[in-house]
Length: 94
Image (cartoon, rainbow, N blue to C red; front, side):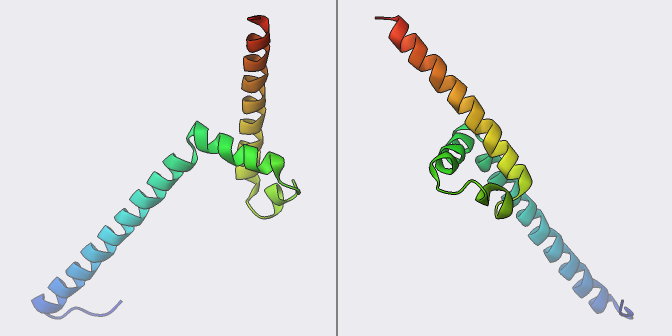
């Protein structure tokens, strides 16, 4: 760390630190908003559906990460169960 000998240097360093803090806070906020959007049930279901119809299920674990793959798999199972219940209810009404 460089030595600060005057008030000017102290204020300049303080300004840099405040700007860096604001930039990091904005980055955290953006990441948090992206996470909230990506973890919505509708988006998870869309991702799961896309992966279910894709030609290769190995991409789930190789390219997108294990956690997202597991979450997507869980969402796919839930969507499948919901669809099965809806279909059975639809045919029971006849």
